[in-house]
Length: 443
Image (cartoon, rainbow, N blue to C red; front, side, top):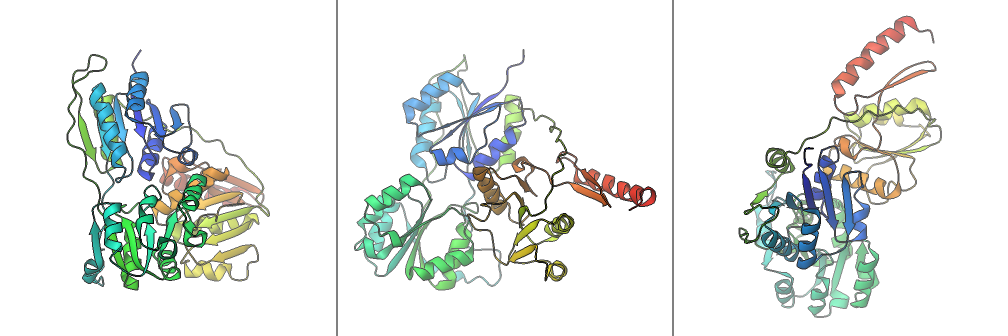
């Protein structure tokens, strides 16, 4: 019997969740560790996906490696989680286990925009860590907006008059709320929110706090770094940027596991590179997609939320209109022709803005059809928490249902899917069926 590849993924980031989704339909057994119950809620378990929540120290990591004997350990933790990464590396060193790091790309200080004012770099103060940021800010006056997470928020109580001057945006988790209250932060100065955050929302929050300083980390594109920098630039706010910690040195492996006397360390910046390595070195095989069963349900008066206003969203909205659902469309921009079509339609409500956390609550179906992969991902994660069926246009592995190609004439309705594998095939088949129905079926 051929041994299945076994991987242990330390997750908690978007990149980790995306990699796990790619491994669902594979021959691998995947063990996943996340720090919190909240992180566990964002990952759907599967027959080959085993999830555990709780922070592990170095000894516990070593014990887990000896227990599950992974072919490699994949570190997808946040780039600022240096202590966790150090512990993972130590555990791999002790057990001679291969270590793979999925390193999030740094954010761009200068966007690809000819109108960008390079003087933003003059309004940037670099700090080596949170303690250094506090030292810098204690020599300044004015309000401070923290957008650097809650893990080290205690450090910022070292700022003079922090109860009055410091505002923070942190995750809506019970332990975080209790922590902030215990540390003495004003309730009115703390915003409990889950991203993504647009440039416009960042501007609004910076204005509301009358901030003169924004403290943030280089969380990369996934973490909304660019949107924060651009908001600060527009308002003339000084950015205190906490530098990324240096990555661990190359591992040395004195131990061995399963007679394996040496191990390797690799760092990649893309999911595709890791998948290629897993296939090349550990015999990872992706299974062909499973068949999806067609299910026909009445949509009359059902609440359907559509995010997006481009060409794909337009096609799907038009497909849904005859089925008399109560549709909510949320998008900053909508194709003008469709906007005219929807004007006066009492069954459709249009909100001209970006997605916000909580928009999916109460929906019967959700379509994530924006042109931003990260936003679509956030929508899918919210739907997972609420148990709402969701179709994600650009990430089939996040779909809990596929939006079909629909062929309809009178009461005859046909739904088509190629199981998410070949949209062109589904489209061509639907066109042939329309021709046949128009020729051979009466209304």
